[in-house]
Length: 249
Image (cartoon, rainbow, N blue to C red; front, side):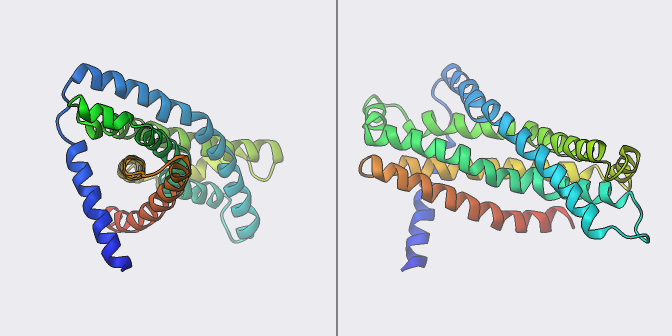
């Protein structure tokens, strides 16, 4: 039964995405909605991205320094390992997991509330493609902002590593810089951006799907928000495994 229900849910998701990814009826309204969503979903997420990334970068630096410190280990290894963790996984996958809780629940609650208050039905009666009108601007907005959020996360994480090294004295900034520059591969940044763009689509589309198909009242909206966050997190982890294998070959 679980497999059958999953196939049915996936089929409903594909049908909804077919409506969402159609051509907007009015481009001016679409771009106006997209700018609003860029601010609400992207710009409003910058503070939490910077804050979490800064402290995670500092914690990674401390943990690596304390756990692999050895007379036989070059001092620059701390900076090198910190850079690899931030670029390859944290700033793309882990940050998107965090954003799925903030952005995904926000999207599901907003669209779900419109469904239970019959605003979506009113749009359909007026001949508007409600799925395209409500969901496509959110998908486009988060996909547009996600590369910026990833770069901000990388920069904040490195800044956190510098700050903890500077103010605690566990390592010198020079050693950290050498580690950050050692065998730097630009492709790692592109890998993070590509994965984050895919994750942005997963977050917005799956969260919108759960909100769009809410049935009942406000309690069901809350349940849909929880289910959306859980589903987004599971899909991000699963797709991260596949994308990492494809991009890092």
